[in-house]
Image (cartoon, rainbow, N blue to C red; front, side):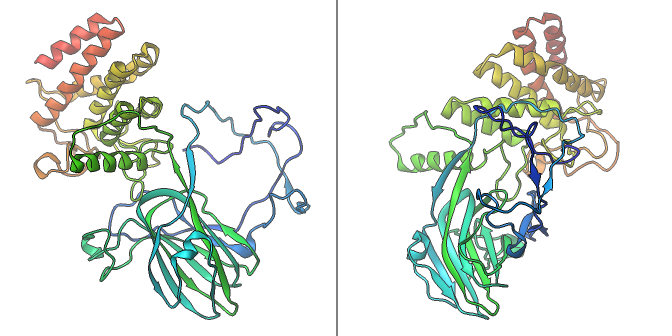
Length: 443
């Protein structure tokens, strides 16, 4: 989202540990290269996966006796960054292991390997495939430990299910693998032949199934261990649900697990396919997270980010942060509702007042798109009149023209937002604006 990447460090207990003082050295790490995004027959919005060349990695750089004489002297950046303190706590990290091996081709291997107790040697010029199962979805940094095998390629693949028919996106029972096809994202490692190598991707992966597909060259490769460190926003489940029904208890557990997967540094539409923070999803996730945990910090961050996304057209983005701007006017109304949700759950008047200028801009934009009968018309070209995926509610995809017709559905969506805006304006003591929005809602 910014002009370029940068590195900033400031010690908390020792001010001498800072990028603003001392002699720092830097090295461009050429061992990492982006891989083309996988073709999953679905919309896919994640960062690139990696090709990691072990021969280019500066092994041992973190050790005190490492020779850094070839590294360049770092210089201060020239870009004026506007940094703010983090509004959320550090993520929760937990070491864990995959549960079982579901399938192995070209090699004999047992579940003991997954417990770090049974290294496996793959002979030269051999192709093997090992399918590991976590038995539920997880967000994690996988760690693969290996030795030798110079020139071997190791594909670390990630999937939330195998497919009965990939092109039709049919998965069936996710527990079953027989007769199904693998289709998933992956990182690619090229071994350098060294001892006790560890590969861990630069950003976390989402998976239930982790597949190792290995092609050795002229040397044997020793697989020593595979494990992972999960990552999540540190929500704590403090609320309780009791219904004396096991099926509802299971739904509660699955729902909370899903919420945890969709919350790390922000809320996600979906951690495996689409790590974007959409207002329509986020409002529901925010309410669930606050009611169950009592922690409203990620909700507050989301509301503030949408406020930052206000554009020249007078609307907030439907998803943010996002490199590509997508406008869904109905989601602006859900954002207004989110602000009022926050009023009810937290009541921080100063924070709410900071959101109101953008909220008022959105409402004025809808006013310009309201006809003489009081109905909201379809939005402008390249905007998406989305309400729901149900056919009669979807209003198609983004608009290709500026032709506008009144819509009762969009009007009701905006009336809901106006009613919430009335409460917000009265909460901050702006009765004239509250009366104006109230009158507009009743037309």
